[in-house]
Image (cartoon, rainbow, N blue to C red; front, side):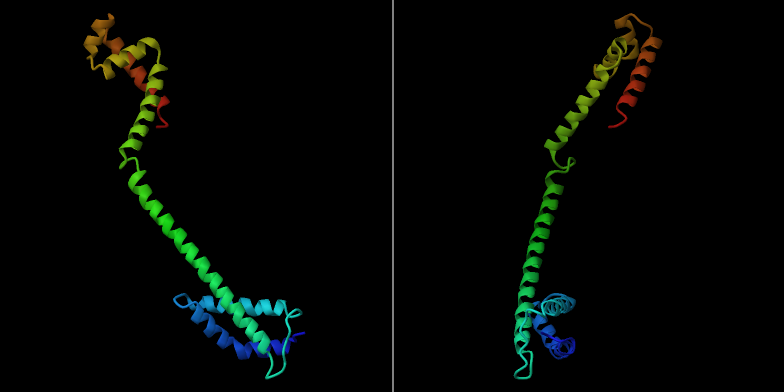
Amino acid sequence: MLERDTFNKFCAAKYPGLIAYAQLCLRGTDASWAEDVVQDVLYSVWKRRLFIRWDSTNGGGYNIYAYCLRSVFNRCINYMEHRKTRRAYESEEKTFLQMAERYYDPDRNPVIQHLFNQDIKETINHSVEALPDRCREVFRLSYIEGFSHREIAQKLGISERTVDSHIYSALRELRTSLSSI
């Protein structure tokens, strides 16, 4: 079994070499990652100390040192694979966002703009259909067919003030029903 004092001496002697090895494996990354990898490996060794054979011959600890070197290497490879996967994902996400800006923005895409406008038209038509009959008729003649208030009054046989009143009521109802647009 590995004793605490022996482990502390091993760490003091081998830590700089393990850090240098991790930095070599993780070249091009932040140096703190090398420290994290080595600390994780040493912590793992300490946790597994009951299951790792400590060789005290030839100056001691060579089996554990070899185990640590292999563990540092494996963790560095895992880190680099994770980093590569993350970069690929970030690249795909960036590409998608660029594509979304180019193709899915309603201001830039006429198809989506048409769908959006069609949806608004349907909402407006539904609100106009919900108006009372005479109010709806006056509103359509004025805003859709372009008749003047005088022409509407003559066509329907009502006064211009009544036309004004119906249009005012229609606009008030539409403002209320279309406030969410």
